[in-house]
Amino acid sequence: MWLRHTVSALTLWVTWRSQVKIEKGCLVAETAGWLPGGVDMELPSAARVYDYLLGGGHNFAADRAIGEKFLSAMPDARISARTNRAFLRRSVLFMMQRGIRQFLDIGSGIPTVGNVHEVAQRVDPETKVVYVDNEAVAVAHSQIMLKGNEKATALQEDLKNPLEILHHAETRRLLDFSQPIGLLMVGVFHFVPQSMDPQALLRVYHDHVTPGSYLAISQFTSEFKNEQMQRVVKVMSQSRDPMYPRPKQEIEALFQDFELLEPGVVRLPEWHPDSPTDLDGDLEVSGMLAGVGYRR
Image (cartoon, rainbow, N blue to C red; front, side, top):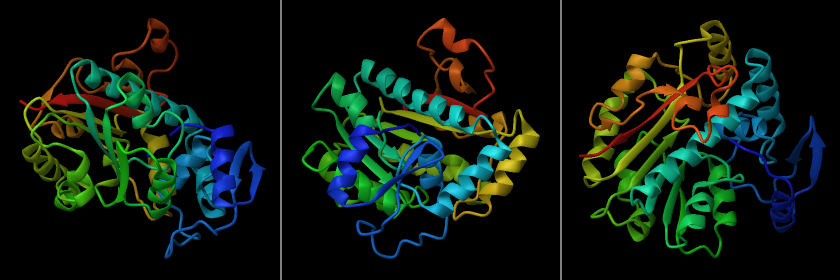
């Protein structure tokens, strides 16, 4: 699930009839009149912590408390969130330049400025997008944001249940699996433990999309800033979404059924930067690695 929004978010909050306040420079919604049933506001979720780090307003006190601990463990976490969001945008545009006009965004998080449909439909209004997240708040806000957009939808499912996602009625309504699809799994696989065999999960997705499809992955790594990353792991163990950073070799293995495209699995700013200045500064500040694969 990372970015910031202000005026557009306030417009949505009026619709949701939430009360808004400012806390630590972020706009936050405190009332739960719009909240989906069954959501535990006391149990932090990765999607809402991510939203807080991006300066969003769809988070609760428990999420913000974890967010502050996350910042203490990783002071550049807000930069990491924005850098990851920038990779999402670049990977979407990369795929669109190669003819992709439909996307399955798994682990999409809470809607913020620069979502996939905003990026893609600016290039081609006919582009179709299915957002998937296992967090009820993320899905509820996505559905509100997408109201009236017939080319995009959001559904509540889990990455770990690929068949439920791939055969969901809304997925099949919008996406044509006889045509190439852009699979986006950005900032989500670090919530899948190695014991769940992430390669096997990805193989299911691989086998359901046609040749010519693409896969984008970014995830936290233990390859650098390891002490800092271990502090982050400890913080996220207090949420409903524990984190499992991986070394580069294991992230590369996620692409085993896809052809890993140049420049391979690299630090976020190194993946097709917009300009040489994107490579200035600390390239490891995000604590993440990313890559894009091709389905032959």
